[in-house]
Length: 226
Length: 226
Image (cartoon, rainbow over all chains, first blue to last red; front, side):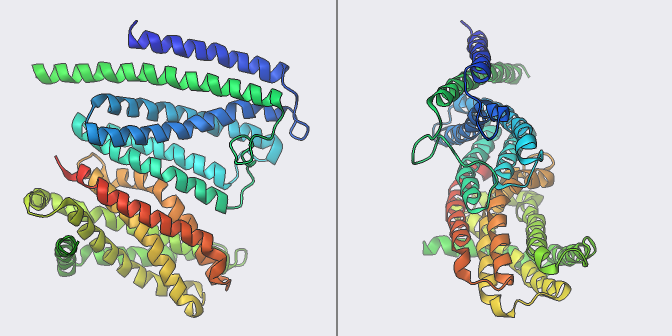
């Protein structure tokens, strides 16, 4: 099976699972006492946020290995991961305000957590802009790797400034040292959603990787003929 | 190590001598700083917003913008007459080239800040005499961090299209942690709070400096080689 087709199948499975998450979250998971139905967005928002950050870390790791090994596959993966990360950051930044309006009474606040996600989004945009601004493939891969590594190192600092800054954002409820503090039915829905988003990430990255592969093949062919 | 520093100093001295002979960039940056501070004064309603609330923001936005404008200079000037190639074929390690550029940039930004701070005190009527030493310390700590990242990125963008604009776009997300830290500490200092209240932010600034100075020293070699 070709890479594009494999990516499409994974994405399809992920989308079916995501539909399942919707059904389970809306019909089979209890409504949160204080936030009401608005809390349902948590099942989309948090997995998307986790993959937004994970994608950036993977971009950085791919960058490190690329600088040492020089394998173009790593560069293609980093490119794919960064684009998918941008999409996920967009999901986080859209679902957040939709939840914020009924709960906080405002679409946007200059809260540390919101600001840091926004900056992560800008980081992705800058990374993709640098990729677009360099013509030479070798140089592009190297520059992107350097920027990706710096971006990865920036993520913990953004987090650190989040904890120092006073924040309105709910504190982590699952990924915290004392363990998850929510009912099992909610946790199961959430884990189900995390699985769907993980597959979605893999599916998107695989398809995007195939596009880069085709572009690289064309560039090589053009270099040989031109 | 001594050899590294000697080479770095040679590069820095070259840049500083070059700048002192022409003075265009330095004078422009100082005038720019004075203009921004003046404009800020008219961009607020003095009856509605107390000066002290706005002062740290004004100071840091001015400093970071002035610094970003001067960062472009470092490698742009090496593009003329292929001076960069000359530097790269000379028996100079990549790390000392980076450190040389970093030292020159720091000296450059320090001059801008040394002129900016008294102007800021004069225009905004804030008393800094009691907290001058810690304030200078915070300025140095924050400046080192973002100039270190900025020097690396200015080397990265010179061979791209729209280098000046691209540098701003990729550098701004990296300014977030030092900017938050510097603004918070400055605000506490100007409000007469003891330095012990700012320990968290000072640690953040110090950690940022250590991580990004080492990272940039290591990654620099991948940005300049053809």
